[in-house]
Image (tube, rainbow, N blue to C red):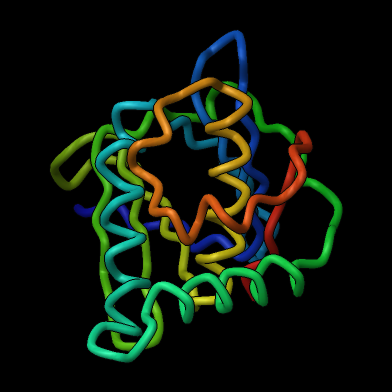
Length: 173
């Protein structure tokens, strides 16, 4: 029997120095909480795919990079702070082993999995373009804090850096 993916509606993203990983603490509409760990190696694969989806929205348009910068600035400026998702027990945490990316024209969904097969734990996070931009700004700040290689980030994202802060979060709905 396949496990159903837990759909998250709130997300808190932190860089954890002692783990050298990103920690995503998420909460579903029903209040279920989970912690998902992401390594630098996993993020080096994920970030370019997310950026490519955003860039696809302005592909073929004049001044595409400027449009991306402006959209990123708007998304970062509209991000509202909120209370963090509370930590979970170790039993409600897992290290991401694979990520499915499901895209539509104006939205995407990431499905974080702790393994393959029917018994893998799965957590899904839906993003509209603005939410994805806000989350990527938080991830970019975490990259800087971690000292991870910045080569995965396009110039238009680097131009719109937000102040570094711990426990930055995004409300998805």
